[in-house]
Length: 500
Image 1 (cartoon, rainbow, N blue to C red):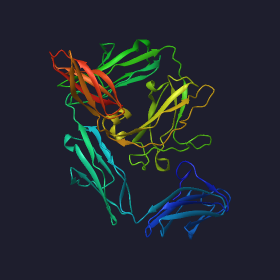
Image 2: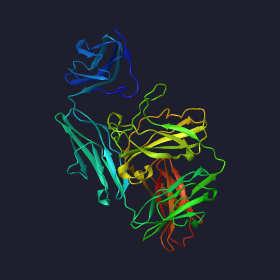
Image 3: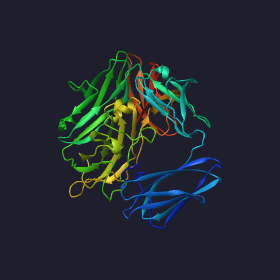
Image 4: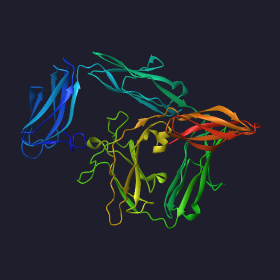
């Protein structure tokens, strides 16, 4: 198999004539191993690489000058010792070498990546994945509640159109002719809200005059759901959808926005989202939004994005990436339109864009992040995440923005990531009574996902069920407490949901 660029997408050693490299590996005597590597003649004529296992030469890999890309070679051998040495000797020419692997092909199955407990919303999706090694052919069988699942015979288990009946414990059993391996049990929680529930909160921003901003909320609960947006407490005429799009923003659009979501049994209010319209705001910073470069001088020349297994490249227009950018972390917002992924040899790389940032001045600090998702689960990252679809995001990058007299800044330091399927298991936090402190203070416990932020909502049940934002909590250890005062004359309810 040939492919352009580095065989693993990063760096590789180059061997001159007579040079050699070697590596010792722990091995099991009597087991057969597959040795695989890539080599490439470096423009100095035909390359010949001698391949040895301990003191035995396995063969000579020949890369002719007519083969311009990476050439793969594979050898098989049986180990005699508990430690074996692989040696590569460049006999002729100059060769680049890459992507070395030594695999036991007489190995029983082994679980190298356990499934994790996750949650999702009713009607949404969830994905379990197990990483497995072992000699092919491997057979897979997923179990739910201890019983085999019909037709679920892959390393990946995708559950869609979820119902409460699918909540429970899942496990994968892997077999080959050499043995069996059983994964850990992973739990799935299915959140099936009856009352109106906000799954993804709107957020504000600072926008220059003439700019564009889209306020969006993702909600769940028994249908039908209705929406009404408010600006500074007053209803916005005609703003009765899940998003409020503001084009050609003017100073009159500045203010604090909230949205009210209603169904037959309840009402819920969003967190406030403050929009600042700055007539003097100066933007114009430029980002070269791409994760593949064909020219030198750029760190991480090719940095693909993968599916949940960490191996399959995102491929085609069904997957999207979007740049999130801002002058600071708290103002990190979508910048530019979502862009699809390419196909074929360019799978894993999204269609590049040049994006001008409305609120980052050229040369000033820009905070960047790349988000990606499976478009099957929504038209935005937030929607895909809220419904438990496949989504993922990069680490935070901080670079000086391009523009002006400088070229567009690249995603310097960007690193590969893979999608995940499903939400943290404690997407919905568990609120429990702890104690009553005189005269009328109640201490509550919130159990949830560690190192996560939760929104606690409150409803006073004296009239209809109306949920209001009450408190935003940072849950560092998995359990955090909060207090509230109550005269005891009314019934008060609390609920908590994770904030991304």
